Length: 543
Image 1 (cartoon, helix red, strand yellow):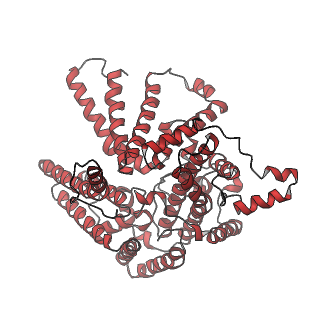
Image 2 (cartoon, rainbow, N blue to C red):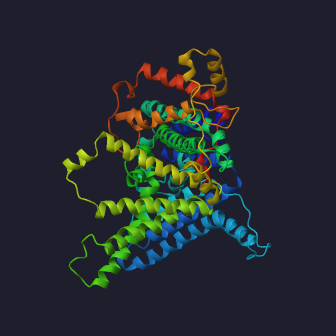
Image 3 (cartoon, rainbow, N blue to C red):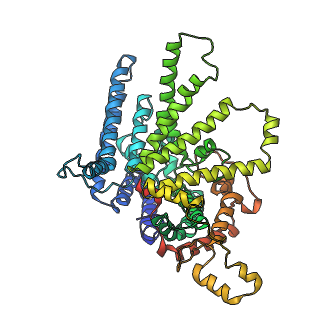
């Protein structure tokens, strides 16, 4: 069951929402219990057997957290840390067993290293990475004394909140815990429903109208990575980058909107990453909660450990704080390589995911090296340098670099990705520049207009009778990405997130609780509902 399905929209969500506010009249504890039950029912719709795994994971981590709280004295710090290591290790072992053991054994079979009787083929539980990371973060917070006020039911609600359970965002107890303890969370407020529904509709439209129509044609392009010339290959790569963008953006909006319907605020997890001027900025905008998670739990501790070793080895030399090559290696290069390697592996067990992580690691190292060792500019000179032309070039360059990593991410193997790269640089030939059939309209060729409309159904779609991407659909999507305000900008001061948003964009595109906006979003919802038959599973569900 996905958010963009009739069963979710017309059965699950109305029952979950109405029941939540009805039982809330009996007390907050009843509302929390209902939220847990409905979230477990949502997860069970995928595979009921894995509900047992989820419940056992919740019970185990809550017990570890309770045990840590009982050892809050300074002299018990080592015991707390042992409990933390035990809990984190157990979570990672479970994640490794389900996500990586099977592929590793299959690889061992292929080279005759592992006997065939050692087989481990099992379905990957949906969302296991997200609820595992959420609970590891909880254990780290417990070690710092956070989250002690939550009982088992509220902790279960924190982990299983169905808007984030399958594909994030990665939540922290310090963000959600106070909301679950606040009685006002469970009171029915009209603004929760109006704002949450509006946010949800925007996300639904992104998913159904902008992401899903690209899925089939992207599948064709990546299934035959060496069969297309340069422009066609680029069209497939761009199509996938836009499919992934609107799929992830749409899901993030729907998750925020759904949570707010239940009175809970989520952090922003997606903030127009294709507008980034650098790869560092990109990772501050793409999967924001994962970036913060990896930074706090991997990058910073590794950098701190290496810097302490460097300090001890240097014995207090006066140039330790200078931006030297040694400092760069300790504080930037090594931590980034380790963090991004693990981030790549987290996305999947194939070699292409490792290369994906290494590519981003290399990008980040180059970007940081320029900041460390490149020319130092004043604010005035920087503004002059990064004028509209240079800024636009920086955005396009960053986007092209990201598209290359996404080709590696989407390809079936490293060799398939390099076949795509070969096509993108013209090694498989250079095809004529595709001319959209829409240009025929200006010339009055009515027959061509008919063919164009028949093939594409509407301007947001892609051709169904051949394997090429409609240029008009890519241009329109890129215009939306780069020129129009994103969801949090549209919602403006009404944005239902934990993250403060800027008021940007033309006034007529800023959401207001008015009849005009209700009619506009109602029409957008109707168009989206008519397209639900072709809906696809969210791309991040597989992680």
